Image 1 (cartoon, rainbow, N blue to C red):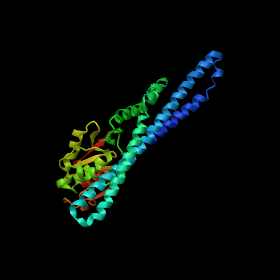
Image 2 (spheres, one colour):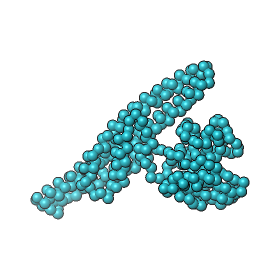
Image 3 (cartoon, rainbow, N blue to C red):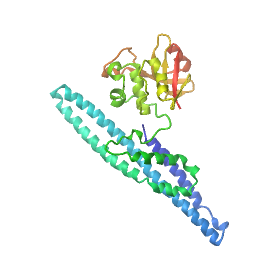
Image 4 (cartoon, rainbow, N blue to C red):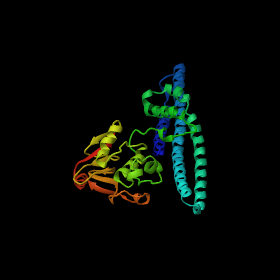
Amino acid sequence: MAYSSYASKIDSGSKDLEGNISNLESVDLTSVWEGTAATKQINNIEKVITAYNSQISQLSSLSSALTLIDQYDEAKSNYESALNNRNKLNSEADNYQENYEYYSELMETANTTMSSLEEKINSLLSGISDSYSSSISVISATALVSTTDAISNINSISATFGTSFDLTNTVVSSGAGDFSKEPNFSNTAAWISENPYAANYMGQCTWFAWGRFYEMYGYSPGFLGNGYECVDQLLNQHGDKFYKSSTPVPGAVFSTNGINRNHVGIIIDVDGDVLTIQDGNYDGHNNGWDTAQSDWGTWTATLDEFNQKMGGGVVFANPK
């Protein structure tokens, strides 16, 4: 999940706060009040400006932390990929020693990067403290509801950072992510270690749909059965996040039990009536790892064409 997109939104919110400061600084109270009254009102506005500046500083720290979280995720992915490849080489033959040493060095570099980023992230998050809550009291509460929620979420999660340091729960997405990317088969959690289909059904459409869902949403879709069962099983597990429909939106999972068709896949994009579909198992067989990585595709069709090709019986689990 790309946390830097949240950082962009936070930076945009900071610009709005800066605009508010500019508006407050331009107020000419001496034309309305005089003497003590003007002084009191100017003092009140200065307090609000001080509070706004405090928020901008806190949000800047949060934005920086979210950007570093993306870098941490990349380092973690590099570490897991290197570990997996090194273990394979270690179990195969001594003549892979050179590669074994290369992956060991890559793991060491990634681990050092992870540790450094963890320290920086914790430092930034620790700076988002109770001063935020106290300074915001002079500003209208309704103006910063989403920002307050974001800070509360970060403060509650940051207390759990330690040797386990799991960033998957640091920021909770309220919606779908970026579905335009191709599969990242170096994400071993999505395709091997966490994927329940990897052991016996690698290369099947269920294996592919499970892995793509995990990549895009960051958690298990919860389905374990045949392609036609996947939407219902996903809704049973995540009914708070998805709903059933006959018309898809980007990020939807589809299942079909049409004529001679038992299939599952992902809707990458919807442009008017044209769907962009991504699915796997084009050769109709279980595959080894190398073949499975190429046995998938991305294609487009209208909703009617898609239903016709699937032989009917198509349902969608749409993200809320």
